[in-house]
Amino acid sequence: MSDCITKETCNCHKKEIMEHIKGKSKLSQRGVDWLEFSKVVLDHIEKYTVPQYGDKGEDLITGYSANDCIEHIKKYGKRYGQQSREGQQELDFLKIAHFAQCAWEKYKNLDTSPEKEELIILEKRCDDVMKNKEYFYIGCTNSTEETPIKYVYKRRNK
Image 1 (cartoon, rainbow, N blue to C red):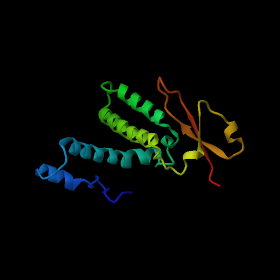
Image 2 (image 1 turned 180 degrees about the horizontal axis):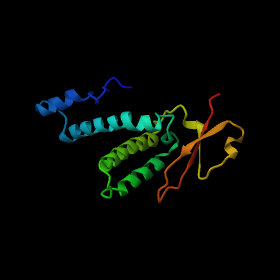
Image 3 (image 1 turned 135 degrees about the horizontal axis):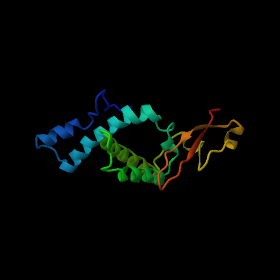
Image 4 (image 1 turned 60 degrees about the vertical axis):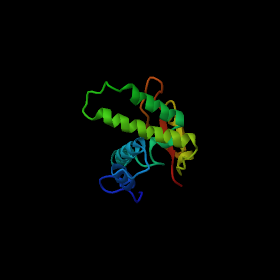
């Protein structure tokens, strides 16, 4: 976990934000807005995403391509304005931001997950993959109109 994370929020850019408020910062308003938003996204990742789905190397996103991440961005974008549950729209914005970061990382080949090569992702469930007991089933992705369900298997630790 980064040094800038506290129990409540990330304070790593607090100095820049306070300097901007006092008129002493070299940051643009867009930059300050981004820093504020990034704190909210970080909080979402640390308090919701990682506890629910696991950290990098353990989650389904580890096996996704940049295109898979873009498909999820489209899915959450299409739901804009159609959410009836309170807070769901804000949650979708945070998911879009997180998937954008993951897509960018994969596009730039910055994904350094240790388990990256240890996943098998198939269009249908295949028990043959598990017969030799080298892999085990860890779950399936959500389907969208553009992306069918994908079944994910992980290599057992040796």
